[in-house]
Length: 182
Ligand code: S3P
Image (cartoon, rainbow, N blue to C red; front, side, top):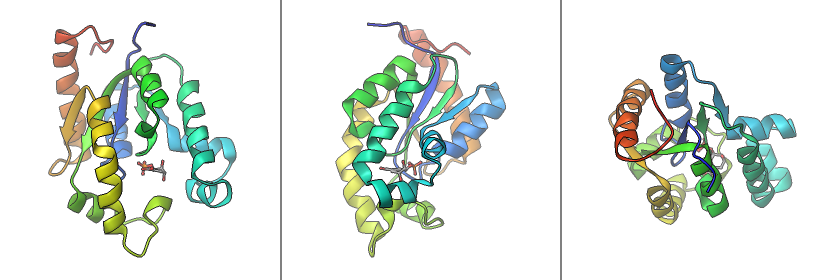
């Protein structure tokens, strides 16, 4: 297998604070951010909601995989979309990039946080709470299986989450031969 990269790869459901945590990690470490959603939107020159409407979810997933595969093997923070773990090939690409960190939250917290915005096509439903519950149930094991580090974000601010990530990385590196070194 190819040598592991040194990226911090953030995974987790919508509303778990991946982007905000990446911004905090960037402030602390100076690492560049690769945000898959932003890369897809920039490539197709279209917001994610519109990509779902015009091309459909499968086409979006293909673009997601292609964006993930295009990220250079450099020290960075990679922000994945909540559905990136649905394809095992994506998880393999994430592993090659670096250490996979799962930002966790429960249904209630996710519902509260995601209710503030309307730009998530999968939650545009008459009953977003039910949708969250179903998607979460279908995905939780995928996040758990992919992750090397899990951080509970329920009562933490993005700044606290970033601190927790940076505290966990050296601990993991000490027990395994993962790439990240502070
Ligand atoms: C999705 C999550 C979104 C975005 C798209 C699909 C998902 O990203 O990729 O709307 O399937 O969970 P965030 O997790 O950043 O909201």
